[in-house]
Image 1: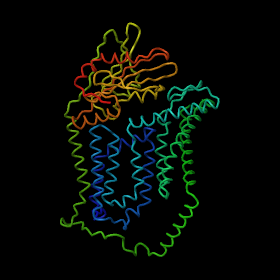
Image 2 (image 1 turned 90 degrees about the horizontal axis):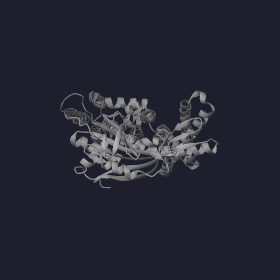
Image 3 (image 1 turned 120 degrees about the vertical axis):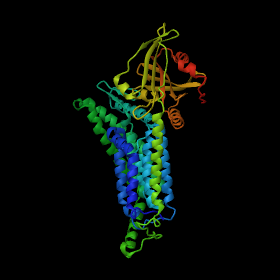
Image 4 (image 1 turned 60 degrees about the vertical axis):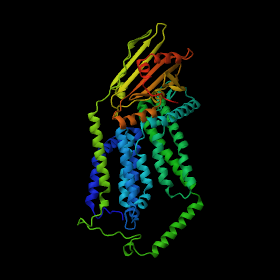
Length: 530
């Protein structure tokens, strides 16, 4: 049978202590992230809702009738092992989403080990809510929110134009004569989407039709887009006509109103889907359940359903059930693996990427540029090169290179594909650019008003050069697991020119082929096949 921690509370406390010892720093940083970043604040609401659902179903899950079959503990053990593996991979790759998700998986695995899979299945909604409370990786969020921000900014600009306002939109930036609005991640709807998805999970739990549940989830997308578009439009109108209170104040209040409106729409749709036939059937089911409960004896007169749990004495070595040690052994193994990884990482020499680019390359001569303090603080790079190379005929190319000896929280690379649209640049074209034999970069063509930007960039993960953000993450993970290193770098070559002038893609690629990194490493780097 499944070991009951009510019989041996000491092992329950010991397991909880090990969880706090291993995951305490991760949990602390996760809670701090919920409070500090508006895009992740829905995590608090989701966890509170999950705890409420667990408490509401406590009799069904932890009551005397929740006895499981003899092999039920194995599901919980597999979940714990999966969570620990996720933790080890996340720690090796300095990937914080994996570490935070591991906390959720292991906690539910310990609970499943104690109560069994049947009782755990009754808590699938709280399990989903807690997993949704973990903020997604930045590379995923940026990839998802970018089209949402572009769509919402376009719809908001069209709406303001229909209302008679003079609007000029540059990417995710909306310019009006009186003010400028930037559609950031909080306005993309990704935060309200996850919070409302939690509401849909709860509201759809008692729906009989799976198709209606799916339809309710799909309805979230237009609802979130509509309400966040109204948020931007109302914020702009209030900022124009009542500027004395500040645009930030209006945006905060408009955000709450948009969420309440979206919640009301979803709630109304849910009750609209609950047809009279289903409602009458639900009422008849409730009446039948009431009649059955009246015919039954009180629960304390009845024997528990299911196989009887054998009594386990709390004293005596021979009567001790060794399965009590399962979670403790798993957590101790995890602690030893993490300690070994930290020891290996501390003993390994940090490899700081270098980029020995000369001041003069061919006919191109350079001038040092200075990063804005806010940008430098956000990047937190170990090494930075920022120069403008100028040709005698007047052409110029900006070279930007940042290197990290060891990537960690707050010290990771930001892809130009996500950062530039956030600054108002609108992507018009994307392509691959062969900068050297076996080495490719990503070419972007962007516009902002009357200006055009061309940029070619690539990542360096250890000793390999890749152009894709996700492949860079994977290479960093592999290098961390195999070599204990997470060094990396980002190189970008940029040209800004008025719209209508000739494109300089060929000039940028020719300049990239003269860089020492491209020429020296082309022979030893594995080609990137695309």
